[in-house]
Image (tube, rainbow, N blue to C red; front, side, top):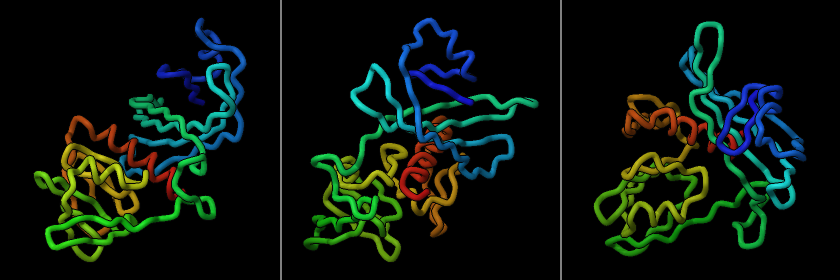
Length: 212
């Protein structure tokens, strides 16, 4: 069992209990851990969610853990662990929630020819093109008058910014590796080799959060 506190990682309850800064009064409920598919036999990605009550937070915190593990002989060792706190989507000011999911909205985007109306659900990925963005949809491409970070601010959390040039919709991601991000459409975009593991975790977490 993996137990976390802040940025520190512990292997098992006993190790955690020995930590001198272990804050008392932490209570965890509704714990669920699931493995995410990877085509590497010596690697594993595990995503967990739980509700946590602790002296350091106000009320009950919805927390998510995404862990990348690598086999070392007969043991599995954590290589990267990411912990994030998530608040209910239907809090005041948030996007409208329908049947427990965020309702998709069509984006009204400026182009050289006028306006384009785009559903985020139909975007496979988008790429930076100078002071504009090229949006790759399932059936066409659209060039809009936005910087990539401006477009990202309009997109729901099923989109992951992989580097300064691309943002991808995890709904259509088929695989992530040193060759880049592969989409179900057969298209592929490159990612920095040094960030492959980090991007794998970000995409796995987004997939688990939105589609599991």
